Length: 223
Image (cartoon, rainbow, N blue to C red):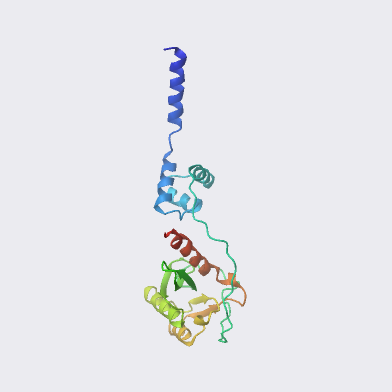
């Protein structure tokens, strides 16, 4: 065979070796599959760093685009205020102009959300989340959303993570958070009630984000 054929083959072999998938990209594909499309470049970067791969987000973004890997994206958020025409007394927003908590059990946030069921009906979920650690400390789901939905979730939270004195429990202006049973339970644990301002849906953004993530990362993966 001619010498040019040998050199062409040698060049092809060198290109094949250079084109081998780097270890970080293999780890990227594996992590993306393990987390079922829930992780974007920010959380994937942390996951790869824990495996010993230090890769920038732009390289991750390029590799994901090349491989057709697209993370789940939250739906466009349309602000909707809670109906606060129940006539019950609401608490002021005690989180305004306050620094973010640096320890657990300083602030809990809560919200009620609708969950679509496989049979076409709805369930209702109330969750309490620690604002600092972002851990869900208590939750309860039911077929309706009376005040008991909130008080049961709060009782579970107090069992799992006993409240400290002066704990601030923040929520929207829904009637379930203004009832006597809920207020008495907070008083029993020495907690302070805090609620959003009228028409200011972003006052409870962290709790709203938790509900949005739950629906996007868990429920939307169902068939």
